[in-house]
Amino acid sequence: MIDNVIIADDHPIFRAGLGQLLGSAFPHLAIHQAGTVDEMLGVAEREGAPQLFTIDLLFPGMDPAQTLPMLRHRFPRSSIAVVSMFDDDATIDRVMGYGADGYIAKSVRPDRMVAGLRALQKGEFVVLRSDQPSVQAIPAAPPALTDRQVEVLTMLAQKQSNKQIARSLDLSHFTVRNHVSHLLRTMGAATRSELADKARHAGIIA
Image (cartoon, rainbow, N blue to C red; front, side, top):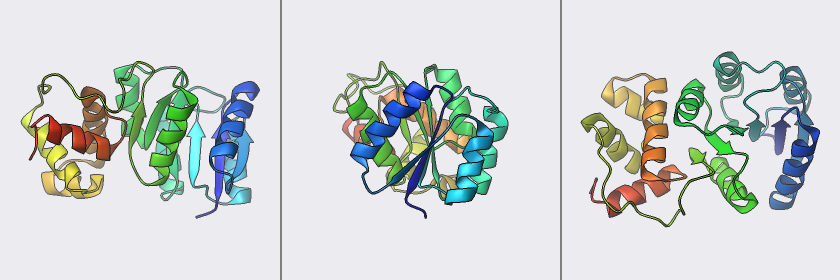
């Protein structure tokens, strides 16, 4: 895996700001910028598959339903984070289903964004919303989950991958992604490991 990050966004000021933030947090990584999907793919071709893509949801050439699955297929070892001004439930579920590993609202604090990107580098799934409660917060009462969601949560807590969960439950990989995304939002968790911890504290799983 090449030690670089590609920031894809059509707003130069945001790209520059995120580039400075990532450069300070990950000084060992080369930071590259792109304003269109074609530029992003050109950088990846020229510099090699990055450790991380950070991608705006809406910018020239971007069709989430086509671009994200294409990136997931072409760069299977790269982490893909959508960084967007939108953070509604339907958009997050749809984007995670398309193959993103993380969804981060542009309005989150810089320290939370860095923490989320660090978790992505470690192979976590990440969902950070602007109105997300503190990562230390635990729901006052366990949320109502379906039997299927509890099954997914139990296997996730056993550190099974999405592919392993999909095989065990005879589900598609995209369906499992959607379940994980929903669970992250419902439990107010930012990462899979935090989700498992909160589920144990809430008594949902052993």
